[in-house]
Length: 162
Image 1 (cartoon, helix red, strand yellow):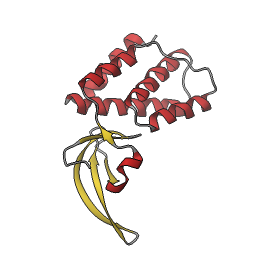
Image 2: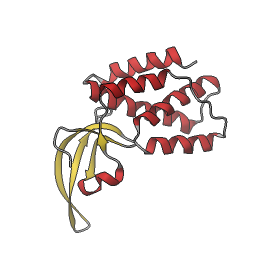
Image 3: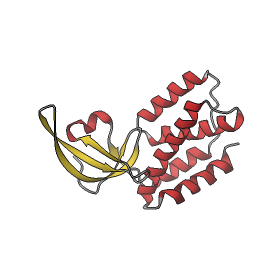
């Protein structure tokens, strides 16, 4: 059970803050929902309270984990030579887990591939989405603006992905 003000991660959407709890009637059944405010894009999500374990909602990372993300982004990229469709599916599975370390690997590897050989349209969108997931979680974790976190991560990626 989460509380108002908790900073959590919703897989495939990124990190946000539980702004409120609401009850809604859907198909004749009343359910409780967390209202999650996302810092990037000002989006709000409603998540059924009784479904948080099934969807993988989790607390945001701590400062030590932020350092681990930076280390992953600095590592050498893994260039997967399979066709774009298989790469896309593999990366999508990583992102769906909500595991921030796997998402960081996706960002690192897709950025490298983009520089080396280019990306399909779907992979470009995936790279943007994965990067936003990391930025939102780090921004909430270190209590910093998303724009400055994104600039910092871009600098790290540009210095290390070659």
